[in-house]
Length: 160
View (cartoon, rainbow, N blue to C red):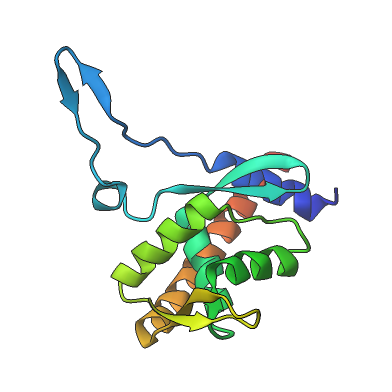
């Protein structure tokens, strides 16, 4: 593992989040609140970075999806495979995180979808970036670069 991969593992390993769940309270049950209503874009996804299991904030998942869709329309499986391939098998987006993220992003108007035939003849939902999604991609990229730069400043300071 080179230094950059180690630092990436530290950054991603440090980004953890807890979420509300349904819990019994006496004879009452407290229903969960939609995470997106309370903590916008703070769900987590599982990624594989080298051999370590790590979590990363959904904002980064949004960034990866938006960037992938900027190349053209993809169906969900194709999106996950494209991210895996471009990361040289370092990142794997789990299905249970991908599809809720796509639904959330569609509700925000960042992407649209339509059912189409795949090259193998199966019907699949293809996702496409909207103009609002392109604007969001720019914002997500800038925010990610700021977060990485800030994290690197802390890491460099910790080494001195």
